[in-house]
Amino acid sequence: MIGTIFTAIIAFIATGIDEMFVLTLLFAQARKKNAILAVYIGQQIGMIVLLGISALAVFGITLIAEKWIGLLGLLPIIQGIRLWVLGDGDEDDEEEDKEVLKKSSRFNSLMVSVALIAIAGGGEELAIYIPYFAALSTTELIITLITFNLLVPIWCTICRKIASLKHIQEPIEKYERILVPIVFIGLGLFVFIESNTISAIMGLFK
Image (cartoon, rainbow, N blue to C red; front, side, top):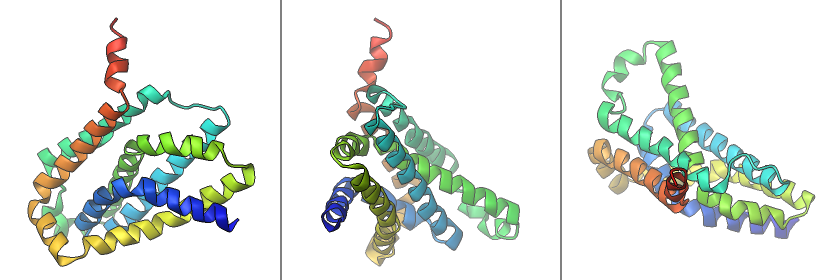
């Protein structure tokens, strides 16, 4: 059991390193408790979805063909374009904080956005999780899934602490209107290209 947990921790860290910058960027933007909580919950939801897809694939249930996983990259691209055009809406924070419904709406919006970004960036994780999970027994798989989910808030806290460092937070705050959309769009393009989805789309017209 200890060996299974240790291996799961190593696998989680190895697949989570590439998302660290995006998470740190999200926490640097999240300056209020509601926003911080939304990032935590969104990331947890994203992980649950990725683990669910991977576990189902192990048992022969494929929800999405591998070549179409790259379409998930459209999600951060759309989010990046939206932020570039509209901004994050912080200018009206003082007025919005007085309205519970608007706060709730923004909380849900951020939570869903974080979850979608986590799922979209998870194409690479799926390629690793599925064969990894397939090599485990049912008991080991359950332990691994539990371990992964427990590690999400820990990983988020680490990224949040990094984001709070002055020499990191200040430049992000200064250039976030440009930096955040670029990162999101770049992430989406990477997922789109890395998954060979372009070739799959071109194949439809042959």
